[in-house]
Length: 83
Image (tube, rainbow, N blue to C red):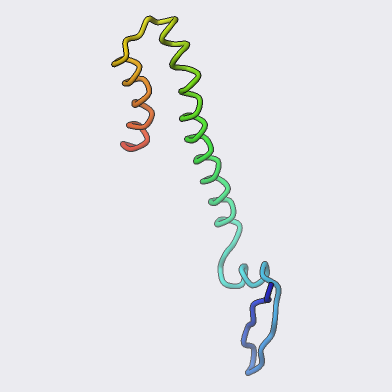
């Protein structure tokens, strides 16, 4: 991987990627923001996957109709869109 080059008094100075990213303004906030966004995305995906296990159990226990199961599966997605 080629290291980024920086101009310093008419000469090119090569520095590693991480210090170069901090020099241009990429900091701890950006890293924490990406990690938090990944956790939120993982939560949304897990919520979608768990519905496949919850709905059959809810159908048996609560005697749900097909329409009720559809609404139960759609409400989290509607909440994500409204929010």
